[in-house]
Image (cartoon, rainbow, N blue to C red):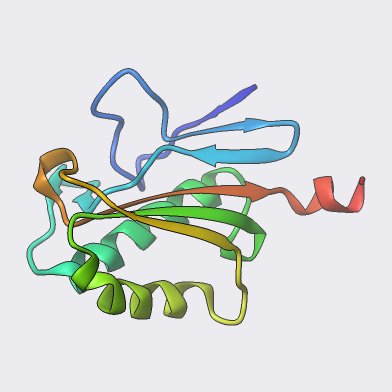
Length: 131
């Protein structure tokens, strides 16, 4: 197991890591809309929060030597499913033509009262070639 930690994503606010790589697979912690420089929730609504979540996920992926093209599964947690369309527009922009598997669930609450949290699983390109 290899722990992933980068100052370009929010520091863990509990007993967990930003990500773990095991056998070429990256498993991230859920990322919320925290600015890593201030550890404060970014201003704005679901669009701004989703954009920050993807910045944070991009940083964790980069620290593991991966990109969004390596993502195979995401899980999206939304405080209000009525905001799905706005979150999905940011999601689509982040992934472009790549289409990982995804689950999206509505939840009663999220840390720091954010509107969205996203976690992902990615596979290193070398792991794919080796299979």
